[in-house]
Length: 67
Image (cartoon, rainbow, N blue to C red; front, side, top):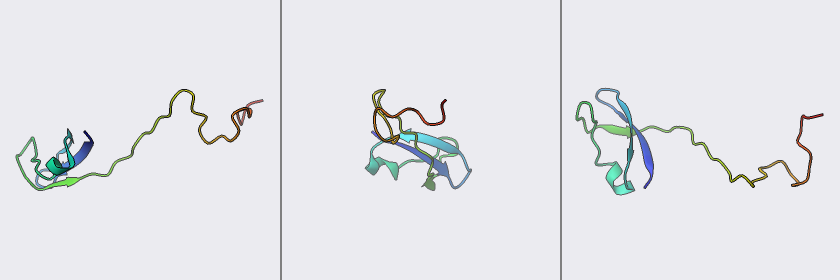
């Protein structure tokens, strides 16, 4: 289930919820009970696996900026 970062338009409370897409629009503020909720757009951290070479180029290339 995805996580959504929301903000209440009535009181300004920011909160996160885990719910389905169809349930997202049915949420209310846990502080004031207001139903005017907007989705906040926040950054996303993406981590690769330990074997991921990233975008450094060839897998056997030396790390840049060392030596």
